[in-house]
Structures are given as structure tokens and as C-alpha cells.
Length: 332
Image (cartoon, rainbow, N blue to C red):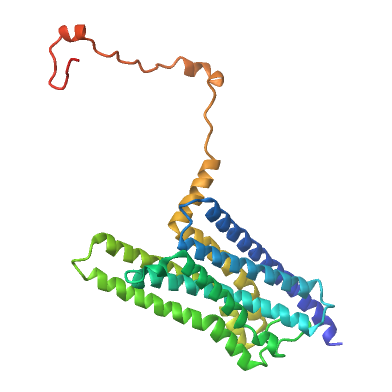
């Protein structure tokens, strides 16, 4: 009798929370698609190494949002599917998507490290081929690191719950936060410090060219943007982390919404922080709202009577004979 009234409350809460989270996830997918399409169609301005890595992050974000929406569909509309194997695979794909996003930020930071510090002696590190290899390594890690979700039996079907690692599997929970979040965030912080001290060293050398100093500062600015986007993404996981510490169900429900919300905000900030991408998007928006010129046949009558500028005739030899020549005039 005690479980009967509680079941509708759980389902009602999930209806609200998953609907809001799904709305933000769809917006994140839309913004990611905008970035991909704009980058693909703008040649060669946005066909750079930086924008390729940015598009890779967008692909990972789209994958994450789709996986989350599928999980919401199973939770709300398909509660009769109680297979542990199916739940385990959904949890595994969720962790693959999370790892893909976080490590995509890491390879962006590694790219900045190659360009800033190692490009002087190793030009090949800035090639497209090297960065495609980085993307391949990132996705291999994203597939291999969450394998404990499949190998172990920690993830199993639980009524009215998403397919995540439960709190009872404490070691597995610690593994997910250390490997999927802490390690890439720590490595990005270390890379930021290395580039920062590199820029400080170059700025203190008076013999360095101004252009080189500006280039190094630009690299530092781009890496700072990566940190900002990563921080926005990690902010969405704070309620879930607090839930693990307090087991407060309200924090768990808030965490479902904040993760999708921060992914959408991160995509919007990607457009705002990237100068080239922002300028292209702004040009597209302004070109669509530009007023078309009127045809001459449709010009109002009062505009036809306006004074038109008169052309000044070219001077002739006879006209020069009637007045003295100025110092800048010559007769041909």
C-alpha cells in the first residue's frame, strides 16, 4: 500500500524533468548542427585545424544528447523493457558520449600545445593528418574507457531510474568521475599553465617580434576559451556530484536537467567566443534581413524629381586659354 502512491509521483517527476532536459538537448543538437553546417559551407575561412576539432566536439555533443533522449524514452514510455543487458548497453553508450565530449576538449588543448610550443621545431605537429589521428585516439579512448559498464554487472535495470552506475558500486562511481571528468580537466589545466608560462617568457623578451607575441597571446586566448567551455560543461555535473555525496533525490532530478542545459549553453558560447565563426554567423543573419533595392519602374514620383548630380565636363584646350593654369593642371 505504501508503494502505490509513490509510483505516480516518481513518474510525474520524470515527466517534467525529462521533458525540460529533452528540450535543452534538442536545442544543443540544433546549435551543434548550425556550427557543423556553417563550418562545412564556409571555405576556406573555417576549414582550419581549430574548427575541425570544434566540429568534433559538436559531433560528440550530438551523440550525447541523442543517447540521453533515448534513455528518457525508455524510462517514461517503455518501462516494460526490464532487460539488464539492454540497460547496461544504454548506460555504456551514455558514458561513451560523456567521455567523447570531455576528451574532445582535451585534444583541443593538446592542439594548442603543439601549435604554441612544439611547432617551431616540429612543423608536422600542426598538420591536418596529426589532428585527425588525435580525433581517432580520442574516440578509441571514449569506446575503451567505459568498458567496465559492460564487463561488470554494476549497471542493471532498476524501476523508475536511469541506467547509470548505482551508488552501491562505489569504486565504479569513483572510476567514472576520475577517468571521465577529473583526468581530462587536470590535463587541460596543466596544458594551460604550460602555454601561459610560454607566453610570459616570450613577452619578457624584447628582441621578439610584436607579431610573434600577438600570435602567442592569441593561442593563450583560444586555450582560455577551451577552459571556459569545459568549465560550463562540468558545471552541469555539480548537482549529480552533490547527489552522490548527500543522496538527495532533488539534486538527482536537478542534475538531469543541468547537464543538458549546460551542453546547450556551451554550444551557444562556442559561437560567441570564436571570432571567425561569430562573424560568419552574423554575416548570414544580416544578409537575410538586408533590404532589397527597388526597381526603377517602382520608384515613387517624388524621388524622380530630386536633384541629380551634374557631371562636370572634361576641360578642353580652349577652356584653358580663358583662365590661367593651376600648378597641378597639364594640357595634353
